[in-house]
Image 1 (spheres, rainbow, N blue to C red):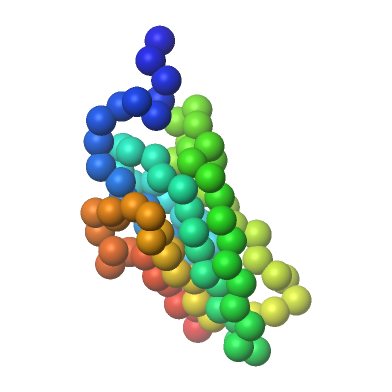
Image 2 (image 1 turned 135 degrees about the vertical axis):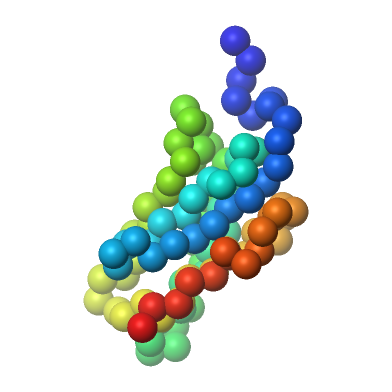
Length: 95
């Protein structure tokens, strides 16, 4: 059996607000590491990184834990190391 990371395909990650839950989605069929900037109402910013292994075993969603003591106003996929096919779905704002 061929390991999952040798398949050909394209990189595309997206981020969504699903009922107040922050979810990074693997839309393309080529996995990529995740670099995510979280911005809170008090102006604090926090960057979190996940390696490519978060997508093993066919996983398509990554639920992100945020600081529950602060109000999240936006989240943005930075992904400076990959060529993301659709960058329009790389930022979400919370109102």
